[in-house]
Image (cartoon, rainbow, N blue to C red; front, side):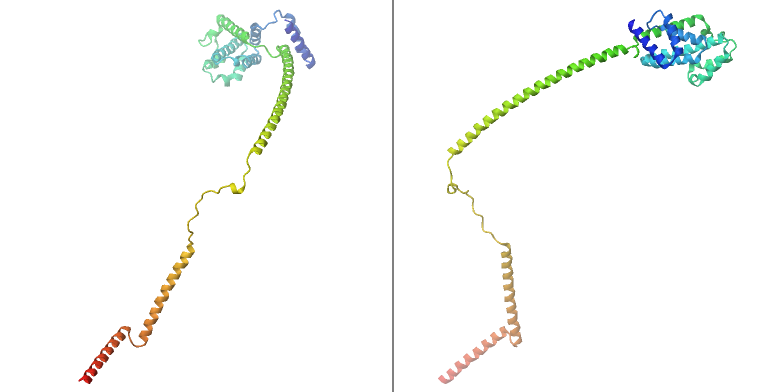
Length: 322
């Protein structure tokens, strides 16, 4: 209760600041006549009935669009058919009320504004004949909507639907201003407390790490001194060796290395010698041919000449002996 009164004062102050005098008067009148400051569906139904009874089509459409954008659109998809049916019933009640008030120009205005939207729905196919029907209360497509039972049932259904939605509806942001401010202050204080605690923990952690590093450095330096002393002691106890004490590895000497170029030179020399011998033989053959004799025939001639001389020597001996 106190929160609602505080918000009413804030709204009144805002309207004074903006200079909305007529709105301030209307707000003051409604606040004086208001008995219950809770959210009620009856107030919305009163606005719907006011627009219908005064043939205010623009006000009716604006109110429904506002509810559709802020309430109906947040419902589950299974409620979309029910919302659409309630909207069509509300528009049909507007046409019936305008006909009962003999406001034919309002009926014409209705179809001029909404014909493009309604002609895509099969439910409104027969209602385009409504402005030209002389007795629509007796016509089959329209007689049901002129009955008092249907109108009361529709308004009761719409009221129950709005009441159910308002029960599950979260409060507007303007109403939650004070709660949000208190929540922000509490979160800021909790955040500051956590920051101070975190800084204290970080300081303790830094101090512990520095002490651990100092202890590690001290132990490593002492351990390094012990290791150096042990190394020097082992070096002093180790016997000294000379170069004569070092034995070479038992590696077999490599085989005879033959130079390929030496082989090539030897082969070249043998070939040159063979060619020289062949050349000398040819020269001798040519010399013999040039002298007019043949080596073979020369040997035969020499053999015949020897036989004749032998026979001559034997004959002469014989003749002389005889």
